[in-house]
Image 1 (cartoon, one colour):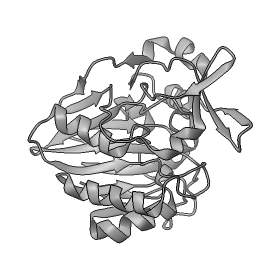
Image 2 (image 1 turned 180 degrees about the vertical axis):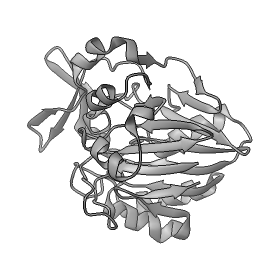
Image 3 (image 1 turned 90 degrees about the vertical axis):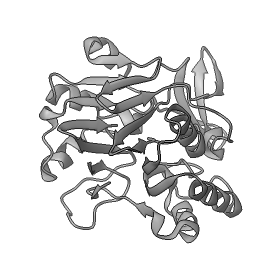
Length: 282
């Protein structure tokens, strides 16, 4: 399985022509299939794809991890360039997605609402665990035995005139089974990375996890890199990840550079950060 990072917050070091933005988009080549996991905040992922030898038009399946713009802002461009792929996503949130920072600044951070109407035949809502391709699984309803990230306190759903905390029931996790092991794709892990891994481990009891790939939402207020939790909390999280049957972790985006440094100090060579243009095999 080969993963190419089409969009991440930081520009790639090897190719100055790549565009970076606050967001995440991954291209996955697996067993003859091509999957797009998230689309970043704009159409920049498609421009980068051309530089990275990825043909957007040939992608067979897309998955949206949740309904925030930094993961689905490029959907319109994807649907314009690709005439056939279905986009698999969780159920719509019960309200409009908003961020509230500094106690008063409110910003809509959801998807382009017209998309779901303009391209209604291209979306597949996943309400139950589904095998969308052979050995490719999308799981809604994330388990909640561990705390959710502290940074979620800035994220809300607007219902009529009220803001209520986002419960992130619209977030999904994707798992791909290869050679008897699983690779887990988490998007932003607003439900908590441990809960995301728990959900997969529960669905596939006894199957080892080869890699976890995605953001952990450990930043306080995007796009700043301040940690939402304490250093001790992030260290404890790193230790908990090591206790799971997870061989490798690849992270970036909303994990944040400061939190990554703390994770790295505990996890050593079992965690790698990704940037725009990062290509790796798992």
